[in-house]
Image 1 (cartoon, rainbow, N blue to C red):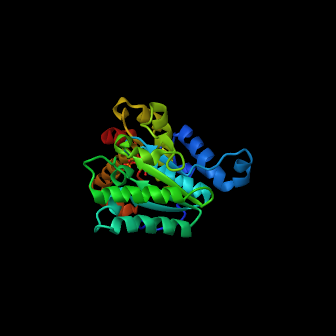
Image 2 (image 1 turned 120 degrees about the horizontal axis):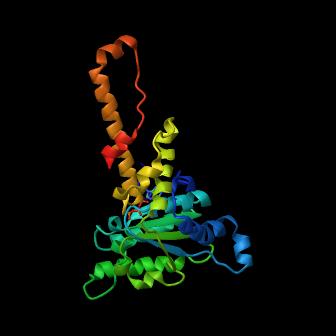
Image 3 (image 1 turned 90 degrees about the vertical axis):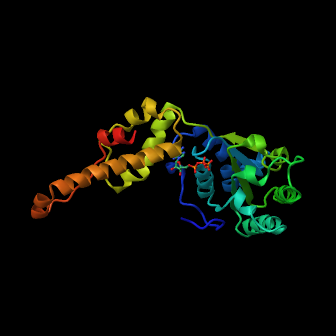
Length: 274
Ligand code: ATP
């Protein structure tokens, strides 16, 4: 996996993202379009969003869509987890924040992605330490500095928008909030097919199982995209175990005939995974 804080254009495209149509359209209008066709957007008086806050439950694709936005914009992507900027000596965190923006400027066009933003910009109330408050202020100052045409677009992600300092959501900062929620049953079908197509499906076999039946199963109610990914892993694991145990049981015969196995994930495997 890519080193944290390292800037490069990610491989993730919209083809890796299932469902989330409305989220995708808003990101296209607010970031991708303005980067790719700046004149078209400025002509009608639309300035690109300085920054966007993606919020919603874990595992529903916030990081995934942020990467796809960078890929589709042909922009570099710098990703940093909020807490990583914090566990530093006094004064070091502010310096790290400033360095991050400086690096983004050097890599423009660049998407600067802050995961777990709530850890970095908690509400500045009485309980907040001076050190943390200084980090919040530094981040706000840097955000104000990446105005129009700087080529830096900031995307923040959080599961807890309620504990974030409200000043960060002002226009000109992360002025646009987009909700990335749990998938519906229809969404799950699209996500599971997308996950399958981009992993197991790429290595050959069509699924002999109707993935729609799996994704619509009541036991998948409340599943996130990440949960569906884990389910698919578990089904693949069950398939391998079944194939391997069969191989061991029939070993002599197989060795004599030189048979190789071609594991196919069956409904039995998905059942085991569920
Ligand atoms: P967190 O809040 O925990 O950081 P997140 O919302 O950023 O979660 P991601 O890291 O983007 O979630 O998603 C985790 C994984 O789940 C993805 O790498 C992908 O495999 C799968 N996934 C989630 N949502 C989708 C989706 N809509 N389409 C395809 N895969 C998805």
